[in-house]
Image 1: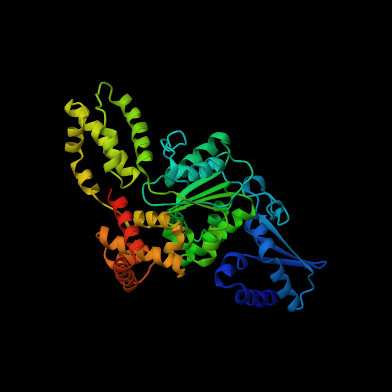
Image 2: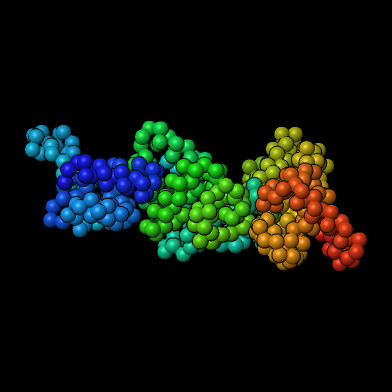
Length: 459
């Protein structure tokens, strides 16, 4: 077969598969010969051999036949040159066939070579305080950490800042590594994934990048919302996701909102992320906050022996600091450190003195997210429906109530409120607010609902 024939076939494949797939998977192929009805190709890596064989072999064969190439089958093999010290003669220096596309082996990647972000030793299942708002997420994470057959893929954890998503992901990684030290676990943020992707493009090392990320046993990507709107990164993430799922490898993803609510995330990625188990970590309630404080306080007592802790202080903090767990833990750590430095008992007065700025910031600070959750629970609708596009009355009316309360109880502007309700325009929020104001004057049930929700939120 002449080179110009393969050149024409490659041009046809470029138009058929698109520029990105062509550059990644077709361009590196070298047609070596056509023998006994088999078109033999050389490829740079064994992973690429398997991938091209599964995903592009039929198209390549079809275009070869259309160009009158006498091939009924295609074969992809890796060819590498022997190292010079092993091949001093010209004969032994010739390329040798190493891996066939039909082989099922995966690329050899040392665990130490994985570009994983460091894991926090404190973030284990033993140190995770379980309560009603996070019990499902904790149970799902525990199940994944146990290893064994993949039961749901991916596990998608979402929720606001400081609710425990990252803690659970680190805990899963620790648990898997403890059970199987040889497991290839890769944990990184979406921004780190994007950085390494761009770096590979710049250094022309895309094949190394693909081989590395597709060789892991467990892939964990934190804050996946950050790849939204990054077209090339989303493309590569999608292919990495598919390759790992096809191999039966476990994927764990986290984000600050549900897959369907991440703006500028490609629909095919949203669909893929929703095909596993999607779990919401709800904002903390009083009982969970108190449990977290009690656990942390026990740990701090070993670091600061001799400190006296007055009754009621933890309950006071759990009631007053509702922002998120990170603020809560930071406040307790500051309180213990301050009491140790000044040699005073940890009393209510000391807490108010030491934490004045945090307590002031937490005073009556209702969030739009908390309003959405409370209203969703009151009307027995899903939080995702309230934020989503559905306009049926049983969802639209609670959505307007939540918009009204967001306007009344927060300092957010109408455009900001609209963004938190699925990216709606500020005029939609304004209409919702006015409609609830009107209904409260004519509908006693609506008036009672709004007042009850307001009291619950302000309490």
